[in-house]
Length: 322
Image (cartoon, rainbow, N blue to C red; front, side, top):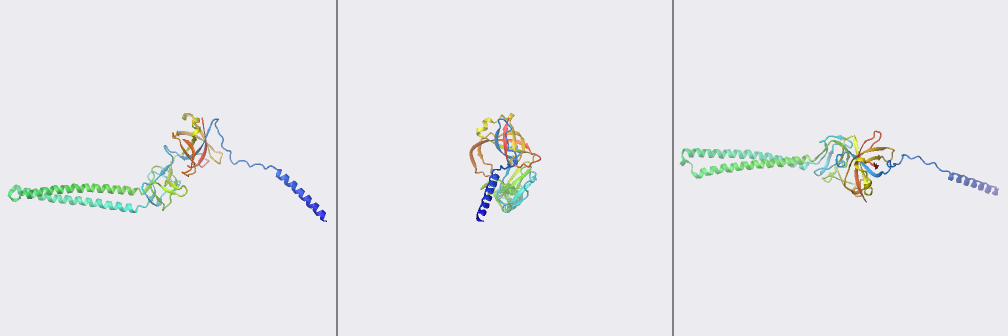
């Protein structure tokens, strides 16, 4: 009985080994790729990383910094919102500056009152001088020479005081205008028509002329980032310095942009070359990350495809040829 059991177990073990060997020898069919990797559409094409930006005549996106420092009390716009030039974006705490402006306004009003007082004083001493002159004309002995001279000097002094009061009023008005203009800086306004791409600060955050401190970047960022409202976007690609000599002349440049993770490719329109080779910064929103490579920025324009969603800041693959 025991021998039969051992014999049965041996047969089962042999069958299990054969089945395992068969299964391990089967080749699994690979999964089809989710998308086709970007391939060079040009015979001598140049590859470059690119980053999408809003379409601007010059520069990159519109970075907005306040001209004064303070805590944010209210944010009046939202990300993705289209706004007009001059629209209020956010407000800063203006308690101290508003009080200063009111103080300057009161000083200007006081200076205006001093003009009226100086004018009244001038009229008074002028009337006294006129009386002295008429009396002297009727009877020179009725008014002494000293009294007449004192009256004339009083008029000159009063006239000088009136001029000083007027100058002080002008200075007070200028100080009030400066204070009022500075007060207006506590409301950050849009410099042009556009769309809000990013708001980097929250209500209560402290901001300065350097922007707002970024927890993740550990550096200062613009308080708001805006883009244009045009139907086109730009893409800024970075040509490696060792490939610059292979870059076609401006009149013959052609390029295609490939959207990562998709089969979408978009033809590009050449805009300009930024003629300054600079150190390449890793496109990771970490401004301190650099590599020992220098690149030449080249800017292209394209229309946003209808069946895709592309946004400023998105990384893409670009091939440049002729």
